[in-house]
Every structure is written in structure tokens, then in C-alpha cells.
Length: 366
Image (cartoon, rainbow, N blue to C red; front, side, top):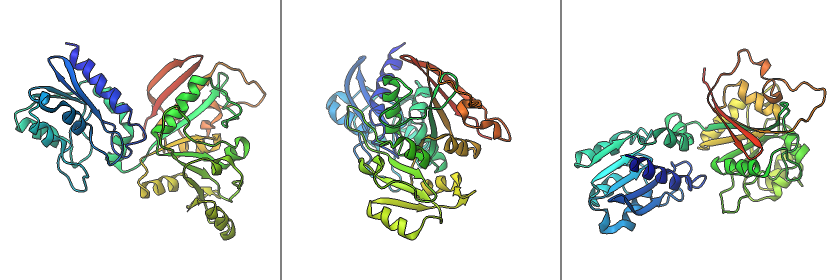
């Protein structure tokens, strides 16, 4: 029967609308169905706001009794530091007859308990409908809950002959318009965005999310060991927080000037006179930042890849030949040939976005 697949797909679609707004919470959608007709819907809209189940059940009212409920994530139960009432209790109180759950909640305070609570109350629970899609949707949440560490995505735009785009700012792009929108959607999903100082000096990008709908702005982090960030850089004029990830080499006077510009200063341990990638990740752990998107440049990308800190790569490949004599090197000139052992990619997905090719894969951990 296709109905469970269809209704769960709708729950996942609803959940996805919370991208960027609910972090570090999961994206959750809820659909109440009676006699194969959708009675009501709900989604978790913002961090700290009402849960998807609460909204959908309140909208359904008395129609919820004897109905089915579709959830892309297991309903929560009572747990320490929880802001909202347990959704499993609400489901029981509203007389739901059957619950379809795409995946269990990886939060150790909840995992399996929500489903067990429903079953103990006599509610039938069907697990695993569109589980793979549900896990991909909340991959950031899953890693953060299971490890306490941020999910790290490396995104690069490159030509068909493997050369990385030299312009990521507002004036010149290598990718088409659909790919640029995709890039902004990707930014909206992540809590923090990282570039090196050379990208700022060369391109002067804003590094903001610019979409038709309102979206939260990520924390924009610049790797800059010596404080070369220009005070008139666009990143300092655009909306959203800016962090200068630097080392002890930054002078006290330069730090004072940046702080007057509302730039946060993170002094981190260095390696080869540069910010050590692992130290930045540890700072993100301390700040409870659940996700990081790395956008450039090549040296920054290589440093995080070689340190085995990247979870996912997203390459946008344009149908252009940039030419030139400089050898791009493996993987778009990232210098991966310097790795002591090759990185293995898994769950590779390749698709077209207009004229561009989107290449996504996960980095197999050691």
C-alpha cells in the first residue's frame, strides 16, 4: 500500500521547512490522517517553539481520535532540560490509533522510549517508513546528538577540468543560477560558515544567506592568524555575526579594533603558524554549534580534509574549461595527493541542476 509512503513524504516535506531555524533541534513534521485523508499538519518552526506533534494535534482537535499520525522522528518523552511537554503523552491523550515513525530519535534521553510509551498505551507503531530519507534530512542533528560534535560539510564550486572557482563573491560566479540558489539553501542549513582570509581578500564576499524567504544568518567565521581582515570588507557590513578565528599572533591593538566592529575574536592553538583545524572544531563544540559549512579556499579545504574532520563533500561542477598550465591536482586542486592515505567516499550521489552537476558524498571515517 502506497499511502504510508505518501503521507510520510509529506511529513518530511513539512519538516524540511524548519531548516536553519530549529538548530540544534531536529527538523520534524507531523501529519494527522483519517480514512486516508489528511486532517491536519504541523511542523517544528523555530528552536524553542511548539513541536510538530502539538501543532498538528491541536489543529485536528476531536478528529484526531482514532486517526493515524505520521512523524519523520520518534515523539519525545519527559527528559531533563526539555522545554516542551512530552509529545508521546499528547498523542495518547488525543486518542491517536496508529503512529508511523520514520526513525528513532538518536538522543540518548529519548531513543526508543517514545515508541515504547505509545505501545504501552495500546497504540500501534509502525517504524522505518522512508527511514533513509528521514536520516539524511536530520544528518546534522543525528551526529550532534550522538557525538556532541558539529557536522562538517565541504562545499566547492569547480570547472569541468577540475579547477576551483576563483570568485565566490557577488560579482563573478562559475556556477549557474540554480546552483547558486542551492548554495544559499546549503548555507541556511548550517549554523556556521567558514572561509580563509585569502578568500576574503580576493573575493570580498558577504557570505550571507540570500533567498526569497526569510532565513537565519549563519555565524561567519574567517580563518585569519594575523588580523588581515580589511575593516571595509563586505562581510563586516552585512547582517549576521562574524568571528575572527585567529592565533596568539594577533596583536592586542588589532583585536581591540575588531571588537569595536562587533567582531568576535577566537584565539586558538596554531599549527604551522595557522589556526589548527581541530582547535576550531573544539571551539565549536564549546559554543554548541551543531554544523559547519566550509566554502573556501583550497588550503582551508585541504587542511580540514587531511585532518579527517569533514563528514560530507558537495562539489558543484560547471560545464566550463578554465584552462591554464597549472595542474589542478586531484579533487579540484585540493592537494589531496599530500594525504598519507587516500580518502574514501561513500553514498555517492550525482545529479544535474540545470547545466551544472552536483556531486555529493560522505567521507568514510578511519
